[in-house]
Length: 219
Ligand SMILES: C[S@@+](CC[C@H](N)C(=O)[O-])C[C@H]1O[C@@H](n2cnc3c(N)ncnc32)[C@H](O)[C@@H]1O
View 1 (cartoon, rainbow, N blue to C red):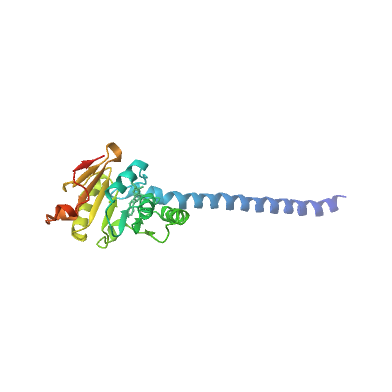
View 2: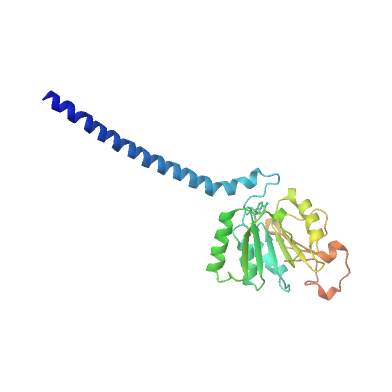
């Protein structure tokens, strides 16, 4: 009996340890895969906080978008949202009839924006690019929307002043530009938007009727 037992025991022991090691592999694969997936999804949301200028993803409120759209009422030409987040401003502008483009660093937000634009039926007029806003030239845009942070507004002011045409309009959400004087302020509190016409910050004379609004501030 003993010799036979000694032949069987090692085999079942071997089978058991094989089973255990393949379970170990499966568990390691699942844990590893989950960690990689969590890392891949969260990193693009965390890295903006580690950049020199921290510009996190904070979506525009419905009121904020309404205010932006008011300032675009009689505008034509392409619009850009700088740091387009989940695409809500670009999609709203496209629905209002403007060809609109968003530049966004976070690829997940860009893919989601493209999906939302398709869902809302505006994918032909709402486009999204995965790009660093500091590496894009905005000269081709007539309407520029930015929901930034105070630390970046001076640098962006200089960039836009160099790049935009005289008939362009810049709309700053929540935080104004430091040196430009707004042509108009819409809304209040965190939903405030400041409107700057390039002709004004460049000091170019323009006929009053070419302006979209007559008062400096309207609700
Ligand atoms: C305050 S959120 C505004 C989102 C959107 N414009 C809105 O109003 O709902 C700023 C966005 O800029 C993006 N961002 C941060 N740094 C960027 C960069 N260097 N280039 C492009 N996008 C950037 C962030 O990922 C974030 O989605």
